[in-house]
Amino acid sequence: MKKPMTNEKLFISAYDEISAPLLRHIYFRVNNQQLAEDLLQETFFKTWQYIASGEKEIKSLKSFLYSVANNLVIDHWRQKPKAPVSLENENMEAENFNDETSPEKNFDRLFYKELVQNHLSELGDDYKQILLYRYVDDLTIKEISEVIRKTPNNISVMIHRALKMLKEKINHV
Amino acid sequence: MFKTIKTVRQLKKLKKFPVNDQFLKLLKYRLEAYMALNPSQKSVIKSNSFLFAKSSFFPLTRLASLPLGIASALLIILTSGGAAFASQNSLPGEALYPVKKLTENTRLAITSNQESKVRLEVSFAAKRISEIEKLIEKNGPESEQIEPTVLAFEAHWLRAAELIKEKGDKGDSSSALVKNINDFLSANKESLNQTLKNYESLAEEKENDLKTQIIQAQQSSDDSKTNALIDDLIEIKSRKDLIKLKKKDFGDVFDDNSPKESIETESKAEEYSREYLLKEINNDYYDDDDDKYNNLNNDANDDIYISKENSNDDRDSDYDYSRERSRDIPDFENDTSSATSSTKKDSEVFSDKTDKNNENQAWLYKISEKEFNKLKEEYSYEKELEQEKETYRENY
Image (tube, rainbow over all chains, first blue to last red; front, side, top):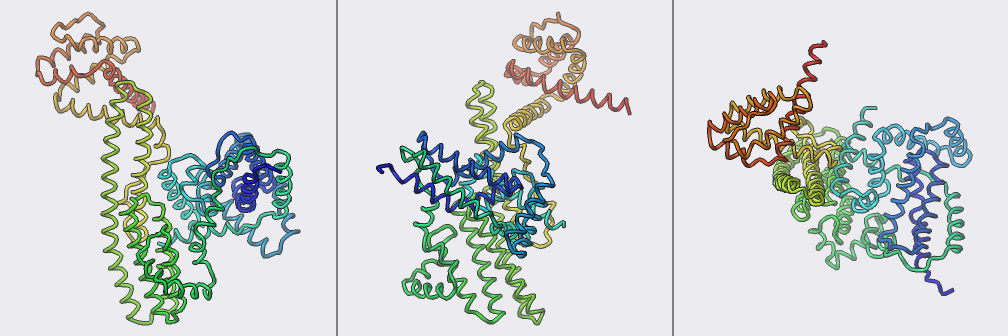
């Protein structure tokens, strides 16, 4: 085994660190657990393909993974521009979680769902995405700018705007 | 007031959203198998930000989140080394800043008296404010650390307010305290606003400068240069917006009942697009020209307007008109009146003008054919609008 292990080791350590937050992020974006898991899997496989091809250097693996996931989410929306969230799917999810988790966790889950689906989703994907990056995934503004390719200033402005909008939405309820 | 930090806290709760651990474990095995099948040849990952963050910032970033007992023990060690003292002048984002935060948290934890707790919270809030000011001075208004510091300020402030509420309105000491706080805040607000205003005017200067440069580049039809300049302009514009937002933010933070309508609204998202900016710049530019025009010759403007309306009756005459006019400019003296009726009238207007004053003529000479066509487009657009309004009026 004379292979350079650095790539593999780094990649797996990145997986350990980021897979859970990334899955969460994708889930909030697409609101569908099955789909989120599929997209996460695709994200890591695609990224590894890219690394194995050895074409280009990756400056920051974190930003890279987030941007791959972001592109996949966007691609998904493009494929089905108006795919409605089917009721069946929702029910199935609820069942799954009744089986696995305690009632307390289930309650939490409902609460989060409320916040994400009712308020965040109303902001539109651009703003939702940016709030998730900043406050849920704790990316720095520089990292966000690497992921969605906008200038840092532009991102700061968007964060402000999104927070303001969200604030109003929450207060109105 | 303080709604922002609450919103952010709610958002941060999303971090605890449960995920399917089993799936993640399974995926890890699959991934490892996949990696074994497709090994990488070269090392392409420059740095892994996760590992990097852990190794270089540990233990300082972790200090603040340690249990209090351990934290205070560490604090004593650090104090004896003078680090805690040295940290007192540190700014957010600097290496010693977590130590500063830690000393503050420890002081809060070992204080049991409610009132002194309030005092401490307020003084820490004050510290955050001065930090914001220093941050702006040091890194400019777009410093990334400002936002978390504002949130930290709100958190201190909120806790102080909650403590006062808990205590109930017992006496003068707390109301006096509140008054002190308010005085302090208004003083700071002024200076913060002033700094931001300075930055805003700087950004505005830059913006105007860029706009003139863009027009020059456009006239020499240097597309790549124009595009590059417009990108710069977008950057500056967003910077200006950011400053405005910061100003608004501070306004929101500092006064409960400040009149909000006085604050300008920031540009909308679509205003960042290239097409929009280009159009806007051109509009501004030709608006300016109109002003110049007005200053030089008041009646001439009206005349042109009338002739325009005539000329716009159909497309062909409109085109003729512009060509005729641009051709006419260099030789005003030998006015050729051989075109269609509209052009004729137009050239009459011009000949009138040349008779009237030389100043006007001098200005007219400067206008190139290209600009004239653009001007023409502007006018015809206005005319179309007029016509639309007219038909609308007729119909209703």
